[in-house]
Length: 168
Image (cartoon, rainbow, N blue to C red; front, side, top):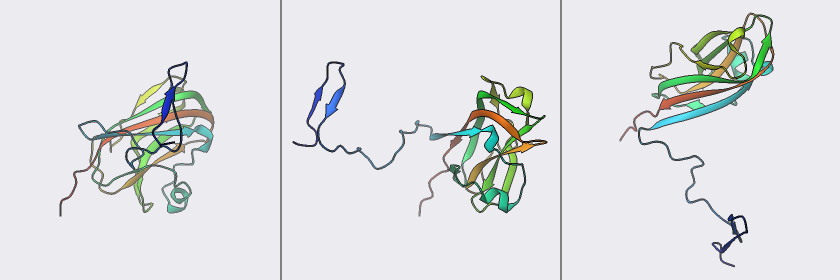
């Protein structure tokens, strides 16, 4: 059968026969016309390391999304899904360059109090890097202050504008 043969089942869902291919090779939705990009990262409280600004600690976690050099950070919002727990812990959210040189360990938000990290909380980032252009390609990093978290989960949503394309 050709690759585009299909039929609709009783629920109205279209069923295809044979292989199907995406229309393009980019695995993301089309960005808004203003060029704004959105990064969403899930984090669990017990996985957050100490806020130590050394290369060994930063090199341990390479899972984070990279925001390109020249990008303008529009906003940072932490959406708490599950209550965080820990002995008077605080949460730092920042950026580090891809070469593990610290840009600002609390550049997206600094010392978010444990009492703020309750289920349903919506914490707007007010760090020094929000509203600025990044000098280097950077990864988002999390760190705790005072004591480790023992529970909790949240989603960090960072919106940024793509840097202008350089013509040759």
